[in-house]
Image (tube, rainbow, N blue to C red; front, side):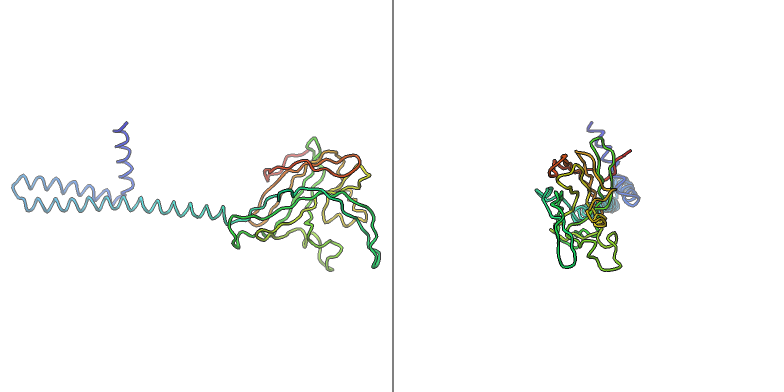
Length: 277
């Protein structure tokens, strides 16, 4: 085993030395042989010249091998540092602790200057936070949109759409000429910033609930027919995508035949889409 390790190390040394190192080592051996030969002919001065020359050539070869190895280690170290920066100098979106929650919010209708309540809705939300390792410009999450997919207990896709960020303006209040899809779909996350994503809502005396999006506001009672959720147990796949961002989570909630929505659990998920039928 030791002999094998010796030859393996010697072969590695030869490869590291390169042509210049190999040539200098070979020249050193030849010079040393000449030194012995000259010494045998009783010409000590010439012999010592070859000895000195062989030592110089030997160290040149050794230096070449060391330099090659050292440069390779520096290149590897630089690459490691670049990879570390790629990991640390990016946004890091996560679900806020206790950020998956339900509450009751009023649905109101504005008639002139008067706001008239229509119903008390049970609403489901989740809060995300940008919590990067380093507070630098590249750690800001930009142009982040939320893709929501709703599945029933059997894994069948019920509906899919772009999510609504709760702190963005309501679509009816947008300036003329601005569409919700262009203006409200994407948001930025500053360092340490939290944003709330609306997921679903229901009328508490009804069995059905609905997914929440900016398109919801196109209907007076918010009952968007393409976002109706008829299942009692629903899974929501939320995928956040943006510059330097691609993360996904699965959320489960219960939709009772009457009463409020009930959150169940959530967990990280692969950002790849599920196969649905």
